[in-house]
Length: 166
Image 1 (cartoon, rainbow, N blue to C red):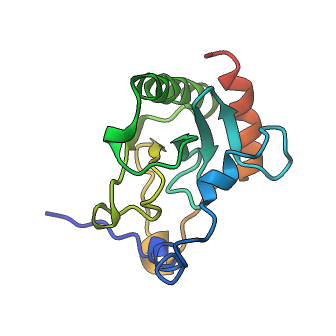
Image 2 (image 1 turned 180 degrees about the vertical axis):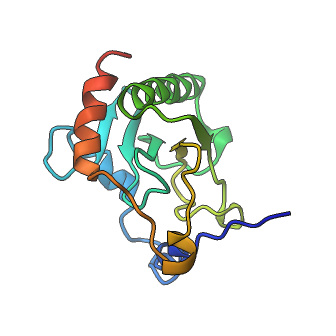
């Protein structure tokens, strides 16, 4: 079995180890931001759920679908929230297909620290666009992940696409 290492993520995950539990959740802060705010990474705000670009993306266009409620367990989602999450995952993939033309997607959630969740106190779902051959030597040798487009430019393009799929 081959292993793919992502050492650039360890610094990000380690940064949460010494945080106080009463510190403000980044998702709770993001849900208060307006899509139109210049430095906000929020792409779309629904009734109960919002979509935000990942500040530390695995790939260009890495989105997260996040409930407004600060919950950490799937069983705490209401039926209405579950449906909206699925609709926004669907809208996200359609928008990413239009804007970035990926060859595929990784979609999922890391539930709990043991499952790899960098933020385990606020439930969120990842949508990572993938392209054939999108892994290379940079993360392994240089501990650097190459993201070829500015996040705010990606946000602008995705906001336009999201408006078509609501």
